[in-house]
Image (tube, rainbow over all chains, first blue to last red; front, side, top):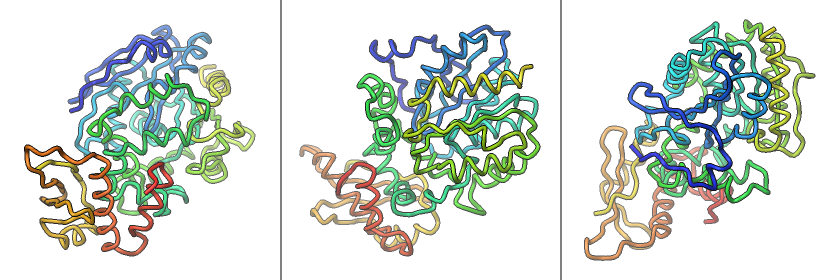
Length: 304
Length: 95
């Protein structure tokens, strides 16, 4: 187990929330829980290789609007424990831990904001707890199956294959460093520190390696059953939906993943996709106000 | 010996390629490595005498990239050392 990092003052200044902790199975999870305990809940789910810090400029909007904002760090990310065994990071285990955390904070109904792996994990939780899902905001995310980009060996699969994976993503920290390829070019040093500090050592980066390996490449892959379950469930989710999409995302393009969500979710339409020009994968860093507005639009219908 | 890499999940289709390398491997640099494969877990050790300074991690990484490339080439198909180099470069490590 890799030791939990402490946030330096210049990072903490950007993240002015009370850190909360929950023992979930064998691991301690860090989370943010802001706003009135009895308010309608919004659950903000990050991806790889980020953490609840990704929502630092969205949480204040959500709380100011009267909602309760809950943003967990998955095991392996942010300030949560970082075990070094890959099997701990199977997606169904992430889903199980999210459900346990939501039970811990007594949230049984919420609007879910899902970006990157937040999609399969959040929607997986909605399958485990069918009453949980009040509404969905989807942002540069997917349901667990590889995109066309991810099926290519050069540039994606070679990154995390056996032996090369622990080299490139572990020793070299390339997935963490690649945040710079997917976030605004003018990201400050302090923000960069916030994203890289939790993965300062090679042994802290197993979660960042396990996630790309967990993307289903087809039948028989360990994540395919969850992806199939999500695809089967989506047509039955009669909940409000909005999509916020960075247009410059090569991994999850709106034309491929966004279009699939619109096709499958009964209350999603093309008009519900808010395109963010020039924004890449981590759309929250580019357009926090637009992300918050999408949450409000969904919440207005969900909690009517 | 210095443990430099742990792969906890050698995929089935990669196993013959790893086994074919055997228990010792000499990098193009001349440095020698020992491979210990048990089940799906592979540990790679750099042969290193305790009193010597270990080589800079960039040098070890370059060796490990060569090892990975050799394995990828042996797996074949879309997997290749060239794809690996392209990937490393695209993601910020010009090799």
